[in-house]
Length: 178
Image (cartoon, rainbow, N blue to C red; front, side):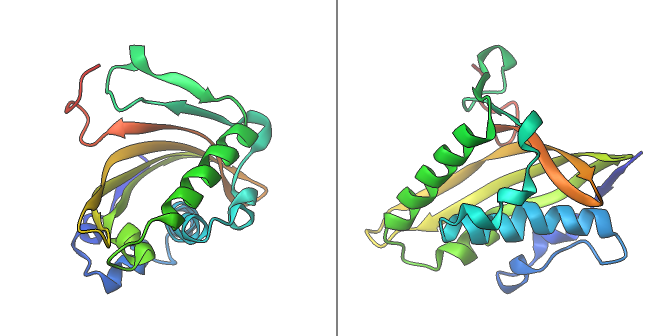
């Protein structure tokens, strides 16, 4: 139907991880990738919500916390409004910024981010964003990035926007039961 899998993006080199795998000839998927990968990572690394604030539909926003389990009985509507999500997003971004890393944080997050599955039906999209990998810390440890998020998007006035998500899910699903 509307699914377009772009599996080659999984095999990009580190420098290619900044490159949008969807060509300009696929403008919807190209725009969604820019919003959920490029712009989101830049905003997170800089703890700058203003870079992403216009990427949401605040009136209908809902963020579901999967609580690290694939059992929906244990999921919760943690972010009932955009302001609550924004505050938590900023808290996490600021906490990450305080950590000393042994590598470039922005490059590492790009390297660990996989977004290749985007299902589009009319003006709505279901986007599968996965995090797979680690970021080396200066203290010799590592931050593990191993979760996934399903984003619900809608095209509003010609621009793709996030209406909500179900996040903090195990990656892969089926790996952590609740």
